[in-house]
Image 1 (tube, rainbow, N blue to C red):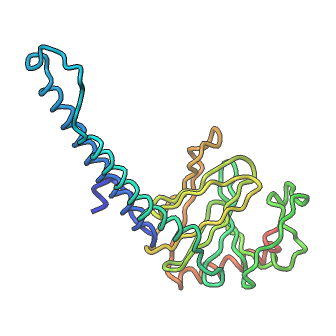
Image 2 (image 1 turned 90 degrees about the vertical axis):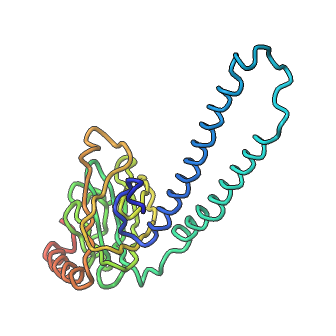
Image 3 (image 1 turned 180 degrees about the vertical axis):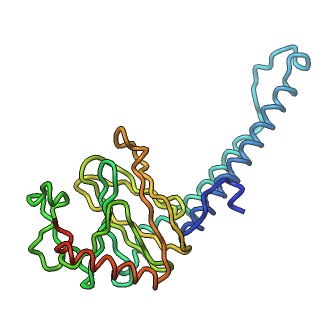
Length: 254
């Protein structure tokens, strides 16, 4: 049913609730459009000059419009309180446990995406702005043991397992960007100096486009990456390959 609204394919668990809210808002807007257009046409005919040669200075005496406006407010309140707020609480306030999720650190830059995964210890390496340099642009501490097993794939390469929550910690190293994956129904700004978490649970194996949804410079349109959703076996194989690759490059530090 959602495809008739022109929405992208759906590939996340919470996306169905987002699509329902969009559908209900469209229903409301459709009803308002038909209702007000019908009333407009009615007034053009009912109060045309030929039928009303003399002006009436008393105005409308009926309270029907007030009742209609009240009904619209009630419907909007139902959409907000009954659908939008619970969806927000579910996605924003009820994060899955980190131990049961795939964690990814996402750092945007002009005009690419950096991804980093914690190793077997499940702990990201420490960062310090004093360590930022040409060979260490994200300021990771090479002496931190927790970071030596972190997985560092090439730019714009993100892989996650299907049917498992994914927590992404989003930041930026230069200007404001925005991490958007339409099939997952997620959009989150990447702001320098902040690490903003969000999460989703992919439900369909596939390869999905990551866009920057915030104008960030003259090559903004080319700031694209892909997130590949694999089955657990395929994801485990990718982790093994990247772990070996990271080990060969001294824990991701050049």
